[in-house]
Length: 359
Image 1 (cartoon, rainbow, N blue to C red):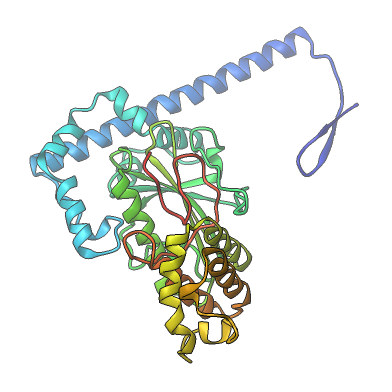
Image 2 (image 1 turned 135 degrees about the vertical axis):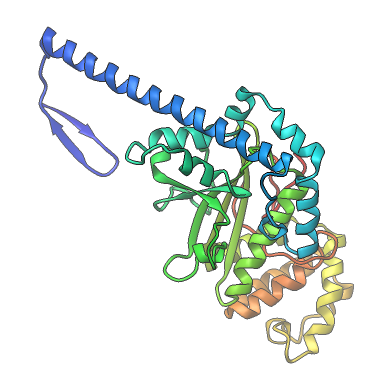
């Protein structure tokens, strides 16, 4: 007997030499299985192309209404309206309709592969139309994905086992379908992959708006948890966004501490100017977190400011205090708007603090 060792268990399998007849039977079974799999892939491919063309042709011809602005991932109503206006502009719709079948397949390959692998789910036109009928397609992991938040999130739908994912139209037409619904309650970790139903890549502004929208949706529902967020551009066509949300106090502190270590002196000086008056405000966490014997931060060196702020992060035991500290620090990033950080280490092209660099 030989021992095949798996990830969690070992299975003893007897060694035998198959007869010629058994070999023929095995090859026939494999051939039948491959033919069935190829047929399912071909059907999924055809259904996706048909559903795509029907939807965007109908929208272009006025037979189907455009999605309302509220379905676009953005932090404000005004930005959602701008995104909707641009997306449903006639030149953009004409571009979508003009795509070749091969281009449509390339843009929707993860969905086609997913449909082809879900052998227990009947492949119907209505299912594919529903998936492509929203503004986005969201792949949700069905298990605790081996995404280690300390070392980064590496997900690739074109390589991963798609049996472990569920595809849904996002947002769905239900009363509550948002990001907090996916991490509130029993679960504090979520890993998902978002794609546009058009299959297009996300622009730099799309990615920024998405990150802000996810962040705001979660923390506005639960400010008591120490949430961390990760956003990772993926896919050969850069049209997938891996979204990681986790309630993890240790990682949250580590991420903020790492961010402080990377700040330059001018930024630290600006933060120090904002923190200094808060030291005498009894309502501010800095009142208790900074020792009264600490000299004025306005005149301190960047090194001293950094260490004082890192000490505040380590000493803040209350989530609200730590949130307040980060808000003050984050207010000096990205044009004066404060954000929560992310502690994922992303691949090249995705920057620190949970947001995207130019790629």
